[in-house]
Length: 464
Image 1 (spheres, rainbow, N blue to C red):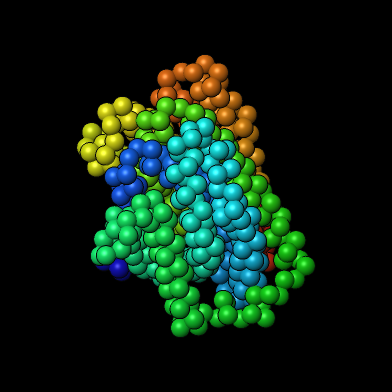
Image 2: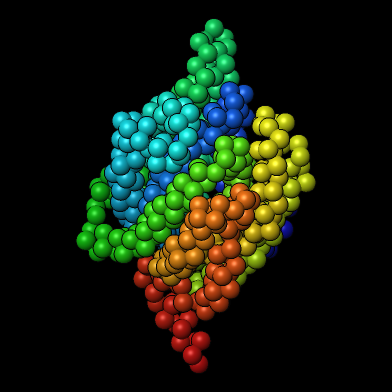
């Protein structure tokens, strides 16, 4: 079977690079789902509070993602030509920037969690519960920085199995500790929501420790060549910042945009907030499939652009644009089919269950379109063009989506499901614009000398 698959390099790339990442993300989503499932036994208010804390965590991850995406862009392209020094320098710049950004989010979580909660919701009960959770969970953010940095490096050099194994260990650890600490099993005190936060901390510590030990034992030269890792030449820093700025601006501003949307959603009925929390967990499973494609496309396209295989990179980008949404349609459909069984699993009331059911139907319609937009933007970044997708996303969400959601949700006080659906209309606009840009090939901007030379030849052939 392996020999047969080698005849289809696109499919081979998805299976070898995307499938392990998809499984890893499913495990990570399972951790979030298990947290929500166990916390749901403490009541809808607790579910809503923990969900709001996770929204702050999502903003934090959006910031880190900007640095990791930029680092992956450089590492994958340098990996394409096996430039060891280029890989090491890119890794060093990425990790340091991520650590600095981590502190910006860790300090408020540890020192002023009550203020953070007040930003996201006006419900006093949720603010109190969320503050207790966030003050502890913020400790785990430091380890999230380190885990994301190491995992990004390993994926970019096609070592995808190691992060998969570490995530599996973390999930099982988190599940066991949740059971022990939330409900007071095996002689431990019943800690409730604080127990969930402690379980998250310990599972992240174990995840990081495993990754670090494996990388030390395997002696990956690109990570431990400290002279090269810290050799930040002026040209590299300048080029890194040029690529980072639009990606970071995109991730941070998109994070801010989603935070503003969550603030509006946080003003909706308490049952709707609980339904949103559960929907985010279920949506995470869908994104797990998407992230597998995302990683595969970033490595496959970045590697080919860096090696000067421009036509092959173009071909892969076109395939990802339609394969990804088709695959994403499957889990969306399954959630709709089994939507009536979910309320019993998460212990929510009839009103919240009604909200959740409607949200899953809206998601079935729009999610495949959104995934196609995401994967095309990811391809632009892997090819070296980070500005176009950033501008398009920010213009659409700040110029269209947020004003519409505010109008529908706050000004007109429309039914919640209409407020929720308003988040997705922008994706229809972006789809047609991105398809045209993908076909143009203008997003290919190599950082390697081999890629730059091949791009000139590619453009000459197109003009002949």
